[in-house]
Length: 251
Ligand SMILES: C[S@@+](CC[C@H](N)C(=O)[O-])C[C@H]1O[C@@H](n2cnc3c(N)ncnc32)[C@H](O)[C@@H]1O
Image 1 (tube, protein in one colour):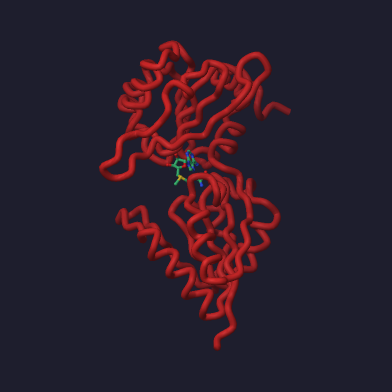
Image 2 (cartoon, rainbow, N blue to C red; image 1 turned 45 degrees about the vertical axis):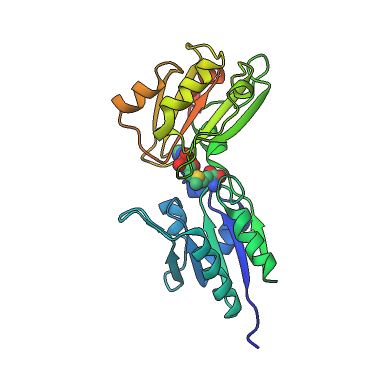
């Protein structure tokens, strides 16, 4: 019987390698085998030892992404072969990262694993653009939602509960459906002038930021050609970010 290996489900953060946890950095720099998603930052990838084996399960260049069941199978096989696997995932493994599914699969097959948290895109992008996700008097809560549609499914969001002017809304994977999201929120009563912003490639040298209003969001995405990976932030705190960003970086 081969000795069973171990899988570290590691959050790689939103892009900037400086946002890695110390534990994630230690695992990555000592890795012998890395299985990674396409949204892992270049600086993070550069920390992997040059002689380590690296398996990509999502290549942006040819839009080829290994289906989730095959990723689960791959992790299982590597662990059954006795390998110590660093499974690198963008942001936090348990925030819209399907890390839960991978962990469930490993658990069902009695494979040892651990979860190493990462800075999720919402938190990293907000910090790097000066947006306090909650702010006294402006936002008493924050919600992370996905704007992604499963094939043949509609956007199944509860617009009434999301259209809360005292809540900051962060939409992951939402730019393709920005029209529907805007429509849903406006229809549920959120004010058209609610501040909104887009962050593309947050925390990386390619970061782009655009501020607008909820009503103008879809047109602004088209006009400024925003592409994934991008986040939408909707709420009054966007205006605070516009002020704080001016002061950021001053010594
Ligand atoms: C499959 S989800 C993975 C989220 C990840 N697990 C996390 O915690 O950030 C991918 C989406 O996260 C968002 N995202 C990830 N990294 C980003 C970045 N650097 N800038 C803006 N959005 C990002 C985008 O909405 C992207 O489409």
